[in-house]
Image (cartoon, each protein chain N blue to C red):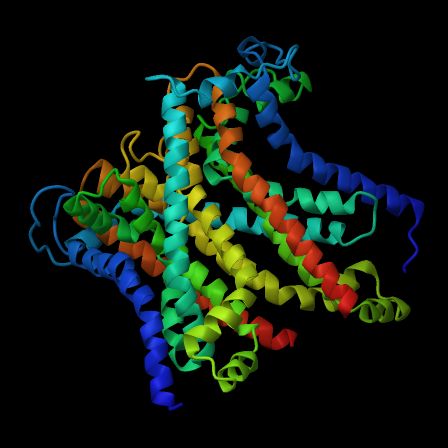
Length: 294
Length: 281
């Protein structure tokens, strides 16, 4: 069979997927680029060409810079916490103890819980009048009066990060656990014979095996955290006083609440560019880590 | 095996209990809220354990009486089932041929890489044109329209899973069948697709989970019972003026049940796969 025919046949089998992807991703993306140079509204006629005005207005607005800081804080703190707690949980699950299989099976629960259900659950836990957190802290005499955890700018972002971490650290733990189980027993045994302490053993013997899979988890989680919308929309809608407003929430408000499709599109593309830069930088890092670990 | 000191063993069990409590407490609380009488949930100090279990909210939400809270909930449940089902079938129909083609013809692999790179795109970058397009086609607030949009998320992911699945099926098996005189499509039907059945099942489950979980597009593109999904219905409940928190919790339990069951079952398959591999190795 000729290789030209093989390639043609492969393209033919690929065609349906590509057609649909062009229709639901390619065309909308190109259209977003076009819109971003206009003052189009969400409904009504096309709008006028305004050049780079949307971009310059957006980049110079204090809304944008503040939202970028909030998004970065959310992404960096929640992903870092998920990584640390996830690896600690994996190290624990890699020990031998009774009930380990059950505990490992339980780890799938937060991952499987739908994001909106998770957000709703934590919203109920943080409830200022009847929430379980207020009740528990009061009964333990840790606070005197009930607090509005999601209603105060000082605590809302932290409360969101806790809820996000709870849902996502188990996945990191399961990935790290799979990597830990791939560490050959004779290597850890040899390091014991050589007298390595627990910290040196983790740093020089175990960590190289974890680095690759953890980097992949780090990249995926960071991209997701940067795009975060669902959990914030359900828990705070970006409030109070915009203290939890992330970039995706800002785009939503601009394009759909205020119906400014053109300027919303420009902001969406700025976010896309930021995520792409992040992903490319990370990809280079992953390749380097994979290279040094091998 | 390394021998452990008693202190270290106690430390391990302490940590294991802490981890189990962290994982279970919020989930258990969601369930307890769903069966606690409203008065217990509003009591100060809060009553952590209901005096009598009250399952009436499940009945309320699953009833289909006209204009009840149940009618809104059951219609969103049906919409979620329909949309995830349709989107999953469509995604697999696209992913199976494409995944096989890329697996057997690496020269076109770059096209799949491009499809997968769309994962980086925030949905907000596509939302405005998709909204305008669906509105133009009359597919806003429509289950078919939303299922179509869900392909942006489901199709790249399932194609990638199918491609890795086909990679683990040796080409030699296909080549042997062809030498015996089977045509390409006969070979795929008799040899390759049955071997790929487990991967197809895994891809389908992941696709269903992704569609079930989706919120952003559903929030934008649906407006009433004709197409609203479970995630939007729950967000409505959580953000509305529902005075009974137990009802919100009940909706959460019902929405979480299918994916949680799938997750537990899938993990069992995963673990049994690992152990059988260990026995063979």
